[in-house]
Image 1 (cartoon, rainbow, N blue to C red):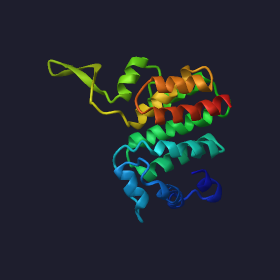
Image 2 (cartoon, rainbow, N blue to C red):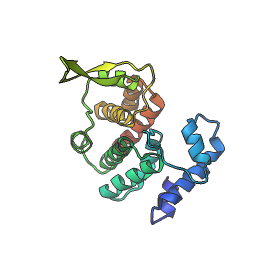
Image 3 (cartoon, rainbow, N blue to C red):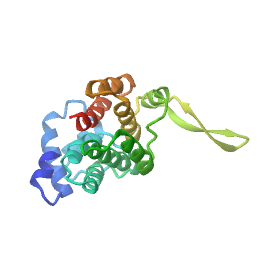
Image 4 (cartoon, one colour):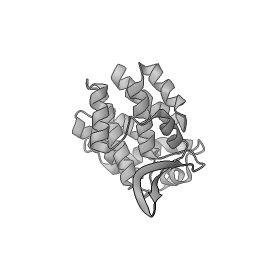
Length: 212
């Protein structure tokens, strides 16, 4: 991703896709999902209509290389849309991109928390127990009484670990915002549960930008 941004001043999506494919084709047996294996190997890869959380890892270097906040948001969306047409993936990617840029440009944690909730609707202050349940695949369901939604929700277990982009970014933000330093932030991300490899990497990127 960084090579694409540095070498291609026009930031063409076709060049980004080519760079990612070239890098990943030597590692097809290293845990890629069936969709990503097909995407990497295709001569004409198509974005999925479903939420594709692996796109988030490509957002990190894109946002770090961006010179301005609008560029960070724009290039993060562009990266996400190479993999997925889901609005959920795009929203999570843009939130991550903005948070990374803010963390590296002197913004406070309060500034970042406000922006995430106000601009992208990510509730970074939910209880850690609820965050853990969401990471483990629980789904928010509305409480219905006499055929009417009450405005309250309960968590229904799905039995599958979450790969929801917005949940993963929210968890990383929560760990980073509550952490005291790089190591403590990453420890908190792992302790939240769920796919800790993704959570740890996203949180680590945020903490590195903030703490240096």
